[in-house]
Length: 213
Image (cartoon, rainbow, N blue to C red):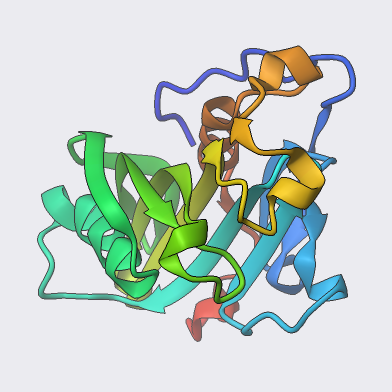
């Protein structure tokens, strides 16, 4: 895919990016090896792939959802971002930026390209059913790839901590207070991880959406 996202920093020492299979190999994309499959630790729904770096409390989620036909293309990423905030009982949710729509010629089914929008937001959420008193401030990067010919909304969501609450379970592994910048840890910034994951997203087998060949 070509969304104007370069692979800048992809060869940063200690944070190499490799193409990884998702959904049984039906989909592939590229992201750093430090993100590990959460399904090895806990159950993950079949329509999701969840990758996490517990050392930085960052995560990357891929979801295949039924197409929401009533949502306009140009506001779909913002809609999904706001829906996510509601679902997670977030406080102080705000949209920091969002893109217009773009047709992605490199991702198409029966000559119909995907329509891509992105949004970035910030919100306060708690982890593992902790209460509001333990909320962390996080930045959320969200891309919506609309595959209308197979009636699917693909969501790619990246979570990056901004401030860790001392009462949060996250404080036990990454410490409380402002999150350490990724570059200080020798890691790609989450904004770059997100861009690479979106720009390299490929469908290897369209049957994953129930589509015929």
